[in-house]
Each structure stands twice: as structure tokens, then as C-alpha cells.
Image 1 (tube, rainbow, N blue to C red):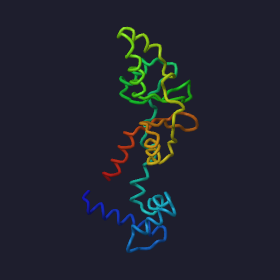
Image 2 (image 1 turned 90 degrees about the horizontal axis):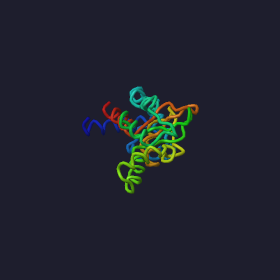
Image 3 (image 1 turned 90 degrees about the vertical axis):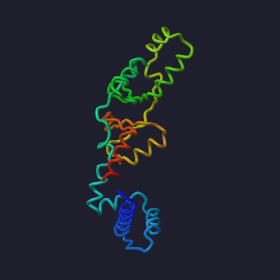
Image 4 (image 1 turned 45 degrees about the vertical axis):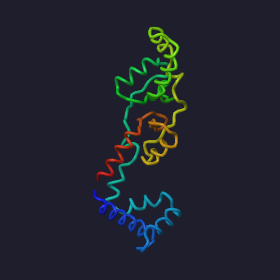
Length: 197
């Protein structure tokens, strides 16, 4: 998409917003839009989407449920750090929801594993390290309580949670059951998909 095409799309969206909220076609659509955004907040985007079928198709799929990884790989709270690290490597994941039976109790990142590993590695000989890593449990180093989101949440809201909390993934929970995981990579893929439309 060229810059002039992008500018034309932006003008179209601004006019659609103004028309949908009763603002009419203004000479200064940006100034009028700023007033309306301040007054109506996030409703503006929903009005644009609702009033434009093309926008419904474009933005309608941007819910956590549509971009999360369903049935994520999990680890039990009592599992060893060694087992968790091996699981991450084998499954090629960077985050593991931590379970206690059917209940989500934490999340473990590859960074958590590295930090625990290196803190123990600095004081031990290589053969001693193996035994110690078997004794450290996931429950000792996981992040708890986990910050989770609903599958019905809009993906941009989930992205804001990741940014504000400075984390890389969110367990997705529905009716107290883990149904998926949403990572920053999933969010980037969603936004790239929108930009390519």
C-alpha cells in the first residue's frame, strides 16, 4: 500500500467516524475527530466498524480467541526445572502455563528458567548442577498469580496488557479453565494480517 493510498483510507475512516457519530463532513476532520474521541473514547472505533462492512471484515476477527494458541503445552507446579526446560525446548515454546490439576496457578517463561539456571550455575560444578536442577520445582520460580485474559477480549486490549505488565504471553481463561495462550508473536501476526488487507 502506498502512502497516498494510506492517507486516502485514513480520510475515508475519519469521514465515516464523523458521519456515524453525527459530526457531518468537516473541513478539519482531524480536529473534529479528536473532540469526538475525547468524548466517546473507544466507542468511536466500534461505530466505524459497525457502520462499514469492509471494516467489519477487517477488524472483526481481532479477538483473542481468533489468534491464541488453543490447548497450549502446560507444566505441573511440582515438575522440576529440568523437565520444564526440556519441555520448552522440545515443544519450541517460550511460555508454559503452570497447572495444579485443572487449575491455572502460574506461568513460567524461558527467562524465568534462564535466571534460575544461571543463579544456581554460578556456585556449582557441572555435575552438581544437574542434580540441583532436578530438585528445583516450577512452583518455586513461576510467576504467580498469572495475569490472564478472556477469549472474548479484543486483541488490542490484550496487547496493552502485555505492554503495561512487560510480559510476553497471557494465559487465556474461560469459566476458570485454561483454553489457550496468547503471545506477543500472535498479536504481531494479527496486526500484520490487518495491515496487509
